[in-house]
Length: 262
Image (cartoon, rainbow, N blue to C red; front, side, top):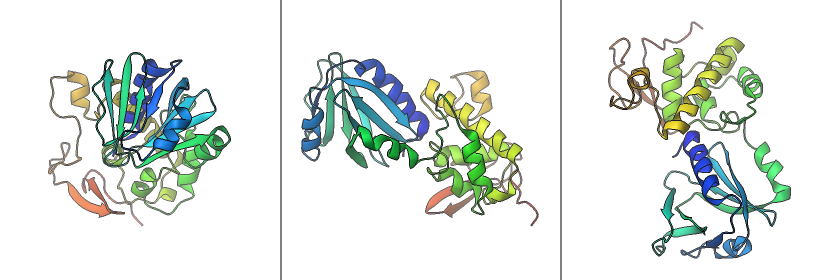
């Protein structure tokens, strides 16, 4: 599933393609034909990322809401574009570019009156222009759930996925099963700052890069992550432990992320 940096990068790129442009909107697959007709010919007033969700705003007061899920993709083309394939849920066609949206988990229209309610369903976005770390920190410190579970809960923090979760907890030396309530405000502020910084790098590089050696050396270094999908911890050279939490694979180093005394 695309993590928050991917959607923010897509929103930035597609804003340059579509903002202020009249768009032809269609559903070659046919599953979104009725919704496509309601925004076909409208002007796109902007694109916006909310965590892992993409919003296309139109001048008729409607917003196209896309959540790609595990298998969905954005497929950009420069005009003149190839004919759409029948797997395309939505095609957005502007004067210079086309975006085909394939296999999204959510594809729906929101009316203007629904937008505040939509945003209220999610926690603060790590990449928002006006971040709200205090809201996430307060919620985590009240919870007895594992921090690894809380970081993946989009109602707590919007934008973190499985790879960033493993990497950030390792970088901060936090055991993934540490209860939210057992982390101090200072620790959680540091965790927020690390997450925000790494997601900002992800937007700029259009890739998940958490390995500091890669960041220092530039694009010539192959490693981009530290322990996700790895067998050995790069810091202590000990084994990386692989487990399951809420049906998602969890990676951590038992030495560098030792459990806290009970």
